[in-house]
Amino acid sequence: MKQATDTARWYVVRARPSLELKAAEEIAGLGQVVYVPRFRKEYKHARHKRWSVKYFSLLTGYLFVLASDHWPRVLDCESVDCILRSNNGEPVPILDATVQGIRSKQETGEYDEMRVHGRVEAGTSVKVITGALAGLHGPVSASTDAHVIMMLQMFGREVAAKVPLEKLGQTG
Figure 1 (cartoon, helix red, strand yellow):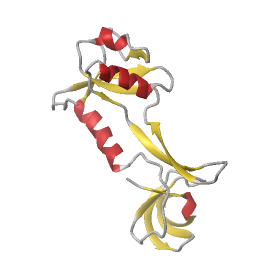
Figure 2 (cartoon, rainbow, N blue to C red):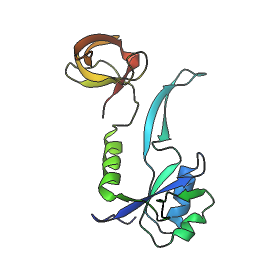
Figure 3 (cartoon, rainbow, N blue to C red):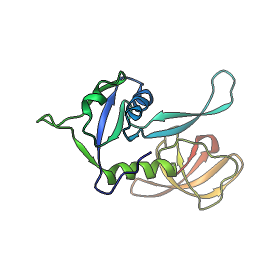
Figure 4 (tube, one colour):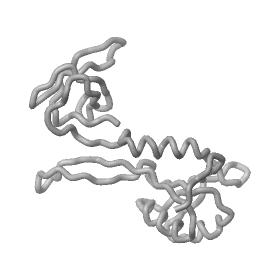
């Protein structure tokens, strides 16, 4: 796979619904460099009650393609819908630093929705993934096998909250 340079430009390609990976395979088959941002989500299966991990597209329906002079070939791909263009009809470039920033956050797991496994050490940063406090994150001040006491920034100050472990996720 080719490496992008510092001055490299990426372009946003819209794929047909739920076909980002298939579009990426087709475009990569043309010799293009493609990146599909994804995240992991851990969930409890409704029927067999086991925890499973599934990958989802971070930007549903979109992927990045490194600059190319072969746009007609990219547009001929079956799973590709269009290339995002400006008002004057030119493809909209995205800086390499922007794409690399997304990629580094993906690699560190910042977008992942993974649950916390086992007892959490004091000082560890966690986020609430379900319930009324979903989306909030903060450090753990105390922990048991069933819940944690964590400090959340709410109402303009730091507030202690008792949260069950099954509602917590790992932070990146």
